[in-house]
Length: 129
Image (cartoon, rainbow, N blue to C red; front, side, top):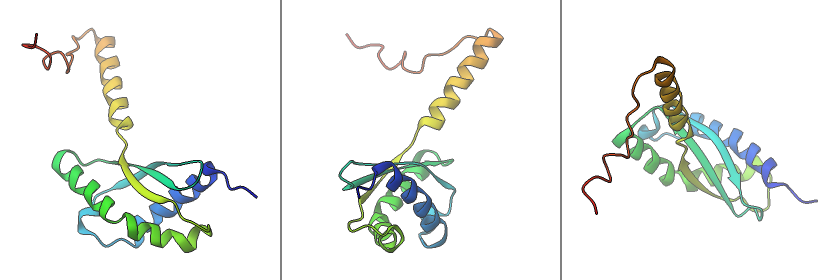
């Protein structure tokens, strides 16, 4: 019987959320962290765990570093929970889709009200030939 990566990803998402909430004791992870998705490669060797947080800037970077440092512990905790012969390597990735969605939402509201929209990338390219 072949185990599908999507099914493993769903199980991992649920279990990793529980591990982060109840088993991890890192003070850098005291803030709210949400597991938004888990993508598992077809050979089940790697799992990309997408996380979202309300933190920004330097705090977000510290949080991501803490998650990366905890990847081995999380994988160890997953072993008995998943019942797989081999547990995929865990890589935490910041999910910025919520922020992009909020930005699009803000732009749409400005368009609706007739307000000008600033292009954030416009100023970056100025002065370069």
